[in-house]
Image (cartoon, rainbow, N blue to C red; front, side, top):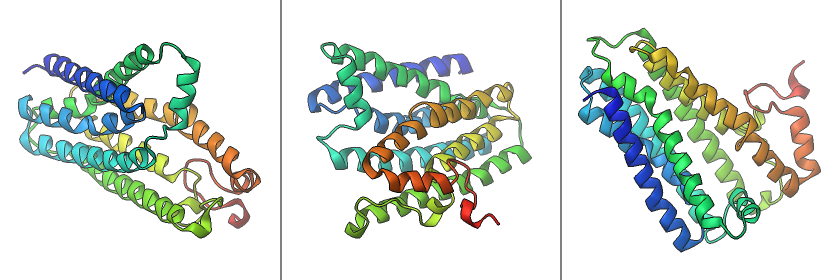
Length: 264
């Protein structure tokens, strides 16, 4: 099957998935489930490309495994976060509801469909790797695998460290500044971005693979300027105040590095 046909099928499946998830969100009154669906949606797209693309099997198996394991881990993590607070809705979506009061359902339908388009677009590195007919897995692909292992391990560790910190009642109202969080205010976002860099590296040797640089670039933009760091830090400043301001002064915002007081 041609890459363009596979992409259109993937886009259709993503749109259908998000339509179903939108309907569920209306019933339960929680638009936050779109985050879960978006993360988990990469797994079926990767399997679709693996089943119907005509590329080299070893390469197909590697990229499919990378995408599916990352997708399921992130989806499971977001399920715990979103449904752990249900029926309370994430602050981002509460603010959106207030902004579009009176037309929430229509707005969120198209918002979910925009997530479907983003899901399909960001699956292109996986698609191009799956249709690559070259017989051997090359250096860039192995480097992508190695970076993926580091990124997935770092993201998992950061999430677990933060969850353990929050689970301790003695830490209520405090800022997590231990483990990876000592070196970055958002190590989970940093390693999430590295996952996308690893997908780009893996797809790079494939025909038109260089075009997939848009995936890590787009994710970096979202994390640094849109829904990642800006929103998270606003929430932290509201809930933790001066303690978080002190944390901001000494801790790298994104790339892990030594706290300022230790740089000498």
